Image 1: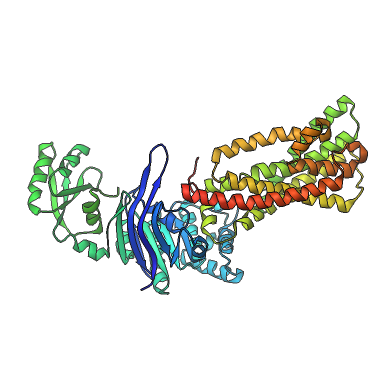
Image 2: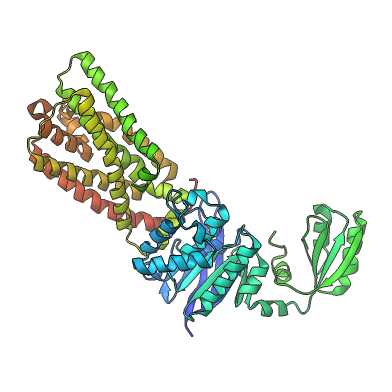
Length: 317
Length: 252
C-alpha cells in the first residue's frame, strides 16, 4: 500500500518568551488517492502540520514523509509534487489580472505554457471565474480572490494538495461547487491525494474518506466519518432550546458528569452529548436552577460535530 | 514593466521627483561657482541613484514584502530555483529603475545643459553593466538576509541609504574623502562604478580614485562575490527560517 503521507512521532515546538508545543507525538498515515480531513479548533496544530508537510517548517522531533520523501532531507523532491492553498490568503499581485497571476504561479512549477493556458481556462470555467479572467486582482471580490487561489493550487496538477480552510468565508453555492470539483479531481486519478483542514464539520463529513480530530497538537481520533460516529453509539445527542442564557449555565451544564455541551445558537440552543440519557434530568435541573426555562428538548442524530464535542470537550465555534 | 504601463502616474513621479532632487544640487554647485563638470556629476549620480534606491527598497526588501503579502510561502513551496526568483526580481528592478535613470540622465543633460564626452563607449558600457550586476548582487544578498528580519530590514535599508550618498560620492568625486574612506566605501559597488563612469565621461576633472580598468576588475570581483554570497545566504536563511518557523510569520 502506497502512502502519500507518513507521519511518525512528530512534534513541533516554537521557542520564544514561552515555549509553545504546537504538535506533540503525532502519528498519521494517509494513503494515496485519499481525501483526508483534519478537524480541529483554532490553535489545534492543523496549520503547523500542513506547513511541515509542505516543507515550510522543520519538525522538532519525529519524521514526516510526503510521497515517500522525507520533509527534512528531501524538500526539493517533494515540492514539484505538491501544492498548497490557504483560506483567506492574500497572495498574488493586484496589478496583474487573474489569468496573469495564475500563469505566473504555473511557471514556478515549470508547467509548459500551452498546457498552463489550457488548464487555466478549464479551471476558470469550473470555478465560475471566466468573466473575471482579465480583471486585475485588486478589483475582484474577496470570494473571487479565494477562488483564484484555489485554482492556483490545482493549476500545477499536483499529486498531493493541501487545502487549509479552502471555503472559509465563501457562499454556500460556491463552497458546494468547490467540494464537487475536489471530489471529481481526486476520483479522476487514483494517484491524487488531498489533505483538507476545515472548520465546517459538514464539509469534512461530505468530502473526506477519513478524518483526524486534532486538538492541542495531539490527534485524538482518526477514522472515516461513519466510523467516528459509530464510536458514539454509547452516547445520545439532544438539542435543548431554552430561554436566553449567558455563559454561566453552559459552564454549569458542562460540569454535569457524562455531559458535553455546546452553544449552537447564540445562547438559546445547546447541543448535548450524554454518555447516559438519564443525565438529561440533571441538565434540565441545572438550567432551571439558574433561572432558565426549557422551551424544547429533542433527541438528535449523531453528527461529526457531536463526535468532535465529545472528544475535544467543546465545539469549533 | 506591467506596473509602469498600467499605472502611468508611477512613470510621472519616477521622472519628476529625481529631477527635482538633482536640481537642488545643481543650483547649489552653481551658487558656489563650482566647475561645470560637477553639474555632470550630479546628473550621473542622480541617474545611478535610481538603481541604488531600487536595490535598497525594491530588491533588498523584496522577500520581506512578499512575506507580508503571503506570496513568500507560495514561492518557497514551489520547486523553482530561489536564485532564479531573485534574478527575475533583479531584472525587473533594473528595467523599472532604468526608465527612471534614463529620464533623469536625458532631462538633466537637456535642462541643465550638461556636457559629457563618452571617451570609450565599450568600456563605459562594461562598467555600467558590471556595476549593475554587482549592486543587484548585493541586493540579492540583502534580500536573503532580510527574509527573516522584518522591521530590522527596514532600519538597515534606512541606515544604508543616506550615509552611502556621502561615502560613495554620488554627487562629487569620492577621492575628495581621502584614500581610506574611498577604499572602505569601495566595498559598495556603486562607489567604484560611479567613479569609473565619471572618469570615462568627464576625463581628468573627475579626479578618479583608481584607474578605470582597476576599478572594473574590482567590480567584477565584487559582482561574483555578492552573487555567491547571495546564493549561500539564501540557502542558509531558508533553512534557518524552516527551523525557527519564521518563513511565514508576518508582522515581525
